[in-house]
Image 1 (cartoon, rainbow, N blue to C red):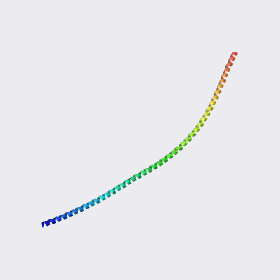
Image 2: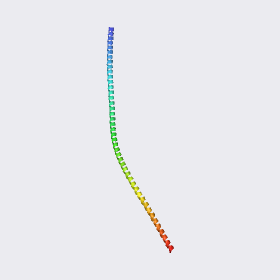
Image 3: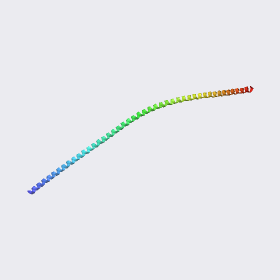
Image 4: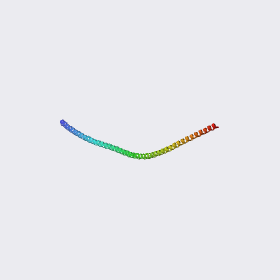
Length: 161
């Protein structure tokens, strides 16, 4: 009877061991499934996060590019305005330069005419000066001749007296 009890006890223990082994295997299988599920979820979340980060980075790059395009457009506009202003200033300077060139040419012609007029007047003055000098010499010669004549006539009168 004890052997039967022992055998029953052994059979019961073996059944409990089997049940325990089966429960352990079930637990292990369940845990493995949970780990696999969590690993898959984690991988999916990581992929989603990486995708989100990539989209955010692309959006940031796009925003920077848009900003640069806007800055470039503004710079091009400023350049066009500056070029227009410079062209206007250059046109005004060219007009002013042309006016000054005309004025200079006119002044040069006037100067030439004044120089010619001066040379003519100088020639007249020189002619008048030569005539005056010739007339003064003639008067001087006449005066010298008259003085000699007076001296000669006084000498003649003194010698006759």
